[in-house]
Each structure stands twice: as structure tokens, then as C-alpha cells.
Image (cartoon, rainbow, N blue to C red):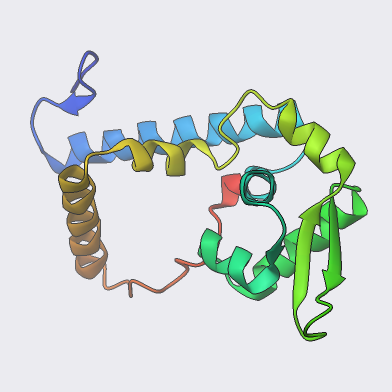
Length: 164
């Protein structure tokens, strides 16, 4: 059972760790649902808009890399956000092959009024961990994936279902 004060398992048994996974994913699902209710867009879309809000217009490829998603996944998100009037896509004047993405005034207004962590609760929480704890978590999850015979790259470039 987990100690509610420290959020650490009393014993590192498989069931205790499974329970922690359940808590993490339920909390992430709830946070995503709250974000969607507040902003009217998915968590992944809010993250994309937060990147543009904080860093200004970007090349689509750079934005996909910043979010660790495939360009095709980004493209689908961009289509929806352009349709909603939050983003504008334009070809670079210097290189017509390059697509630049920026927030519209409507998009800036939405992001300015947000009271949540638009990148998503899970990425924000991971960013708060000390480096040694994050490294240990990465090693443990990597070991678990190896035990499951799941390649590390399998699906790692897609947003989680509750953030799409």
C-alpha cells in the first residue's frame, strides 16, 4: 500500500508498483479531461500551443521534434487547430519547402487565459524530478519494457491517448 504522505510504496512489490502506475495514469487522464474542459482542445493540442506561446513561431519540423512526435502526427494536430482559428501555417519566405506555424490572436488569447500547465501534467511533473530520480525512473521503465519484449521506440513518438 502507498503511504499517502510520500507517494512512495511501502514495499516495492509488483502489485504495489502496479498500483502506482494506476494512480499516475488515472491522475493524468483526469488532468487531461480537466484541460480539455477548460480549453476546449486536447492536452496534446494545448501542449503544441504552449510551445508556440512561449517560444514564438516555429518550423513545423522543429515543433514536432520539440514535442517528440512524428511530423505526420503534428500535421494532424495542426489541421484541427487551424480549423478552430488558433493557429496559422505559412510557407517560409526563405524556403518554400518549410512550413512555419504561429498562434493567431485567438490562439494567443486562449493561451494567455489558461491557468493550467498546457504541456500536460505528466511532462511537467517529470520535469520537476531531480536528474538522478528521473534517470532511475528511465532505467526502471526501460527494464520493464525489456521484460515485456517491447522495443523502446514502439509508439514512443505518439501522444498518450488521454492527451490527444
